[in-house]
Length: 195
Picture 1 (cartoon, rainbow, N blue to C red):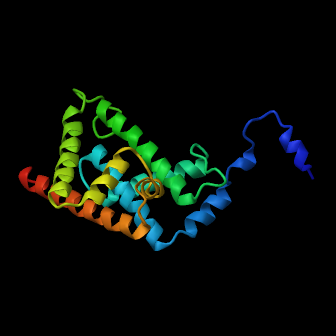
Picture 2 (picture 1 turned 45 degrees about the vertical axis):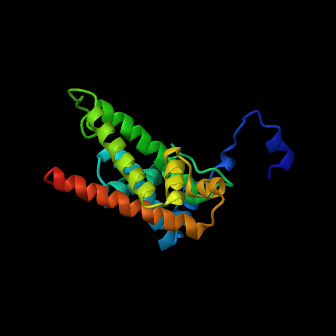
Picture 3 (picture 1 turned 135 degrees about the horizontal axis):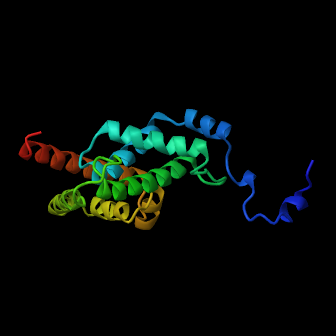
């Protein structure tokens, strides 16, 4: 057995023991509560709006699945001391950002280059965010507005609660208010675009 001092003398800055292995990842995945999966799916839906231009469960499931696959493959390693849900939030943030950038260069994330950069998609996403922000201001929902700003700055739920100094129930109420307005703007866009 290796002595505790021998691991300290290792020249490698990060040892394999710093990260959870596949068995631990699968165990953590299996132990997620329904509420935790709901929060992960809600975050995935939110992150996919700028990528796809819609609020859709299948897109969110794909993003969450990709985060799990990348974790199991070891391309997005789960560090010891980080909550599993926080790790998945970070993975989804990074993956969706990459997909958004790729969507700007390609059509529907395919290998076929788009005829022109997807400026329209980016403008549509920004218009949706502006519409949601305007509705939150109009309805006097200042906490929800501040939560939205934290999300846009890519803060996790825990970071947002800490930054704003709000308890979890207030955070989730604000999240619900944002989601309702996001769903209504997408319904409105679907009607005007004849979807």
